[in-house]
Length: 308
Image 1: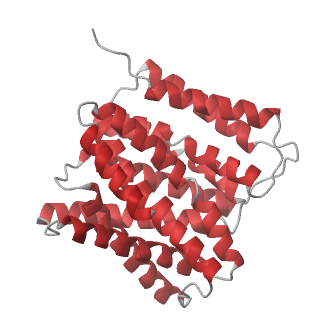
Image 2 (image 1 turned 180 degrees about the vertical axis):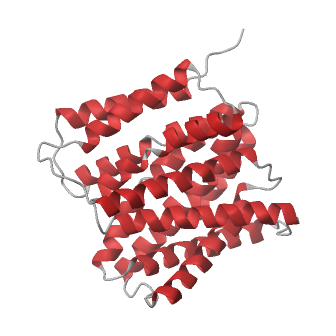
């Protein structure tokens, strides 16, 4: 099933080259939804007794194997130039940092809350693009950002109240910042290679980085030890790692860094829906309004009026 999905993506790219913005928008939406399933796999593996280092190492090493198989089937050359190697190294380090801080934050604050706070990265993306690349945010972009932020706040606020753990919040904000920079690097640095090849190196860096971090921190890596653990480790490797990363590269290249980040509003929405349907969390009016606002932001971003 997983390999069928990969080849479907390749076919879509071939069939929709005439409308790259439409294809990029679809990729951005799917990337956000897939990435929003991170808490599902991570929390299930935590329940199975795996630590954060082991979860991330299993995720990235399995994703690297999957991407390697795809590249072998495609017979794609893996050689890179020195400049490309530098860019790929930066991407690998950024995504390793983003993943580590997000997964560690799950230890301090609820995964759904962490996913909503992670959505500060579109604002960071827009600010960085404006300050360093002189990219002006249009009226449509500003409206989309405001709607999505209000929607995320409604998803976050609860009647119970209570303060969040400071360390958990800092970890999520660091994750958001490094992810925003990751999107910008993908968008601004021309890499003349397929998304699969880019992520072959990115996830390799992530797997090696987690192994080194586990060694330095003195926490031994533990592989999945039963069928349930292997299922959720495979889920993390395929859905929020491989598929999300590959689709995000296409989205960033075809619609731009800021629109890709705004489409990421579907990440916390996905986390909330998982909480409702998987963990039986309550669904109220405030939650419904937040979902509508986020979907409105996505529609505004995705809509491209036809040129005369």
